[in-house]
Image (cartoon, rainbow, N blue to C red; front, side):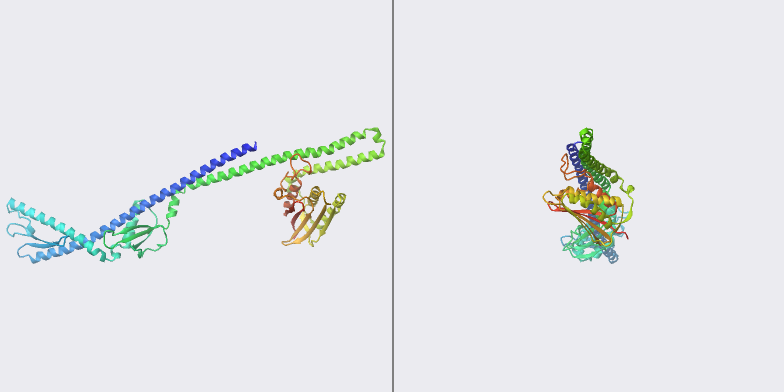
Length: 503
């Protein structure tokens, strides 16, 4: 698959997932907003109903009080006027005037309080009945006017605890909220218009801005406010829309999986390119010694060459050197199987790292000196026993030294050094340093990747397959250690290995 096609698919899928997540988030926000509006509407309806209920209770209180007073006067007048059977009472009108009423009773022709007796004439009875109805109407009208005046005049003098009892408010609010579908715990407070708190239930927080408020007794000269809070409102709103959360979570999971798949696709493509590069380099590296050996074999067929001892010796040395080179390249390729099956092929033993390093340095020193350089060893570690595969540990050191020679600078003689020392945490530190061309910062992140080389493609100014450092990293990890690198272009590189000591 072409890289451009991968990018097109990635962009299309990213836009699709982005739009999907955007619409889901917008839908969630609209659902929360709608639930909050429904909640607020239900609460305000409940508060209005509670306020109206308290107003009705206020009116009922004064109505019952005035009726009791008038009934008391009514019976007193009956006793006072019992001699002639007439009932006299007075009602104060809204304009301040007083109207007097008298209900007459004829002992001979009517019953008590003006109701006609059966023996009176039809005309008399009809007239008396009209008079009674008229008197009762005026009585009720005056009574209602008296109640209204009493409410306007006396309501402000009543204690607020009597006008708005906390138990009555709680029960009424609970009933109205349940009727409006708001079944959420609440706390409330009754305060004056100026904000002074009269009384509040436990848990009420005046600093909380999430308060629903409505005036109480707004039509009287002294009014108050009923403030209600819902401590679990957010949980209630969330519980009503939580069914959307799983779909949002699944969309995010799909997005993460998609991004991970895209990353894997790019990595796989890069790995494929590096494998192709590896095959090209391997073909080149193997073809060169094979061609040299083939040419030397052809020269051996020449009789003049066979008769010359010097020529025979030279051709024999060429064949031997190229055979060694070919074997070395084949071993490099075999590192692939070691990388894939490292743990199954390793044979761990307790070895002295200083001794192994000293043997490697002595073996490699001749090769460095042949290049006009020097190789020194400073084995200062007092404790150097580690638990490793000795053969692979030796190969790790050879790979690092080979790289140091491979990337040497042309303007100076190569200087290589290997050192050991004890560090904290019962670990052995091994440093392999050189004065080569160094490694750029961008390459430092990837030099331990399989098939990666600083020089890639079909260029062969630097030999190799990009397996050496990947092999080193794999082995050190199998030894339960770590490896890092410090490098500066034009100065050199230092590879630092840390291995746990044998306890």
